[in-house]
Image (cartoon, rainbow, N blue to C red; front, side):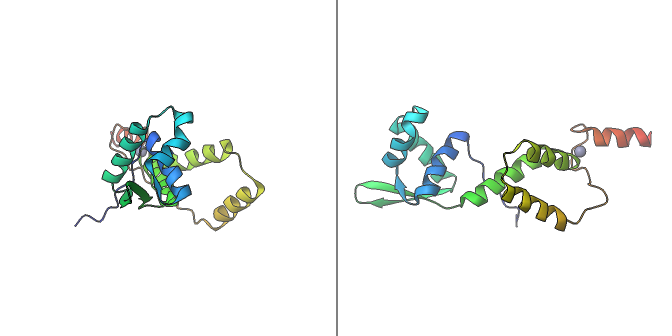
Length: 151
Ligand SMILES: [Zn+2]
């Protein structure tokens, strides 16, 4: 039995649609399109295509309400953001996660409250003595160095 949780993978355009649905709760294609069309230049058909894909991916559910279809989210915004972040980190060497987070903190606009929260998390963080590389040999320099040491 595969217990690995599949990452939630959505495109940039699908994100735009999801953000409206997360904000509004239950909503229909026309309402979403009215909000996004002037910014995105989408036609109703485009929005409907995106909604169809999101239903197929099991991220949205749809039900008929009178003459129209109403869409609602099956996954929360928080869950999706978390999954996207985990997905990004799964594409880099585990040894580089720390420096990537440092860069993210350095570049982000943060309030004092954000900074306090980050500092609190850091204070309670238990360090490991060494991070183990999780890459396929050839994908990062760690294993090349290891191989050279063994020669
Ligand atoms: Zn590595």
